[in-house]
Image (cartoon, rainbow, N blue to C red; front, side, top):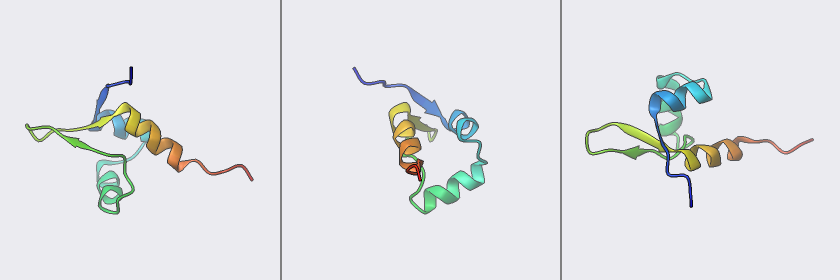
Length: 62
């Protein structure tokens, strides 16, 4: 079964070592991990989406 863990934005920012402002700039450019907006306005990122985003950031070995 797929990992259904949803991370808070603060957890994501801590993991990727990025400020909230920088994250929102990346999001505006379409370069951030996919976001889920909850009915209460809070943001979440699925663990699997963050992992896929990390993989997309990897550079091939030279």
